[in-house]
Image (cartoon, rainbow, N blue to C red; front, top):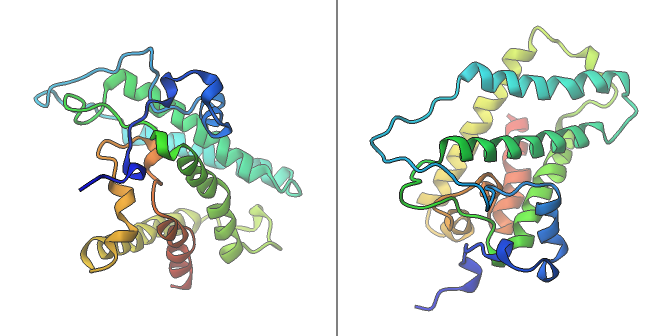
Length: 229
């Protein structure tokens, strides 16, 4: 059976001459969010080596620092409508830089078999659109269904915030897990989900790689179900 060219995840566009690039290619390069650097080696470890460990507190500290800075600034500049969006995207780009540096430092799981998949030649624009949807549309929809615009950040019940934030993450993962299992196990659902699994060695840019129907449900369906609960 002849393979659909749209299913290719071969990334060769970074080695091509820049005049051949489109605006979609340039966005990855300008913001420097490539999963690996072409001129920098990635460590490869045999499976007998110990897996590198990243301290849980370091991860939480990084998340909290990047999360509370825009909250504090928002209370000072509550009229600045673009603050959260800019802070979210700058933090995301910074995280992609850190993940790439970490990969070059310690390597990747299964790195002795295959390197990380890059952004596919046939899906440069599609992957970029998925990042834009996640960066702008998903937060906008979440705000639309949950944000009480008349209350400033200082009105939050801060004593309840750790509990509510923890519950939200657990419940959201639960909804996504159930929805993910349905995509795999219920007949007729796999066709909406198979694109997400084309890559076997994904990088952070491909974590959102999916068909349009799945992207819509990821953005609207699951959060709406959780808020309704």
